[in-house]
Amino acid sequence: MKTIFIATTALLASVIAGPTCLASEGLYFSGAINSTTQESFSSRNTGSNAPNTGAAGGPSGTVVDKDTGIGFVGGIGYKKQLTEEFFASVEAFYSVEDADTTTLNNVRINHVELNSTYGADLRLGTKVTDKVSLYGLAGMTAHDFDSAISYTFAPPKDNVSGEEWGFTYGGGVEIALTDRLSTFGEFRLVNDLDFDTPIDRGGVSNIEELDYTVIRTGLRFSF
Image (tube, helix red, strand yellow):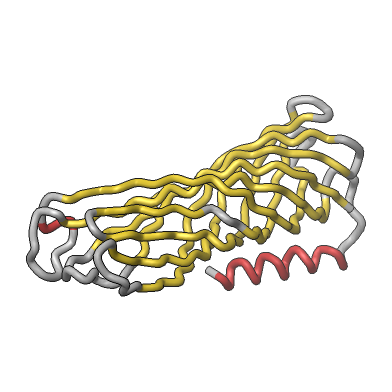
């Protein structure tokens, strides 16, 4: 998936060398703030002491924790008018994040910290008025995080660094402030990101899952 991000960024950068575009379309840069909610699910087989049996092997205890943090986002994109009313854009972005969650399942503690995200989005939208547009979005987002696993009865700790890609979908509204500057707000969802952790000290494997809900607001400046 990293190659998708790199290729998209290179494609967008190459547009600079192309012909001059109308003010309503062309290359743009964006700066934004994320309100990122990380929801962490940890499922553990509490119904059996048999070794190496996951949640499917018996009754499962599931613990959920949720935390919202602030992220800072930079992006580069290209917007194309399909018709007078409809448009499409593609954007590559990178954000620094700080959401973290902690699940306590029986004697097992899993602390997950989201460090950063990056990816690419496709947006399809339409004008509502001369200044207001609505759009839907879909894309792929990589989530870089650290998972620290410890236990209530002993000091041993397992550290896992992960990068999981997830399908992103949502929508937003964009309001023109000038011919080149606009402000926007959008809602973004990523569901069911699974990641692996070592079998715990009791010989039991666990199911780990992350969900993300993001509200992104910022500015876009076109050239």
